[in-house]
Image 1 (cartoon, helix red, strand yellow):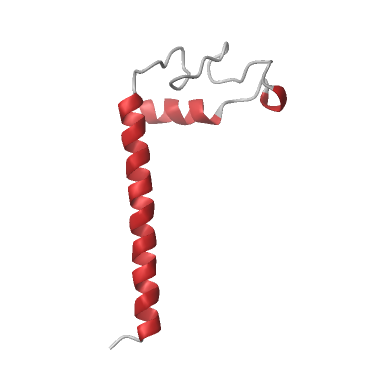
Image 2: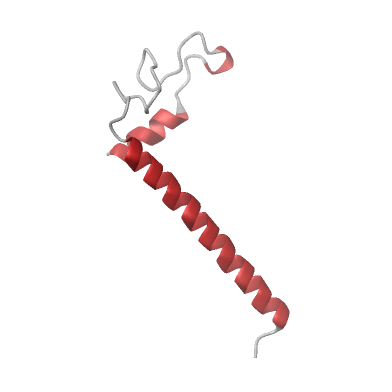
Length: 78
């Protein structure tokens, strides 16, 4: 028979994996639902960068840098 502490640790680990699975599942579901909604020119939905996937010059410290959300969106789309 397994040690009670080991068993509880395994249960917590299994619950943690299950929570991560549902988080990822919901994220993928959201991305799938948003496909084609307000996305244009290589930007993720609701992003309107002048240069696709690059923050505009009026965005302070992140200006002229790649937009991680748009990169992820384009990766998921393909």
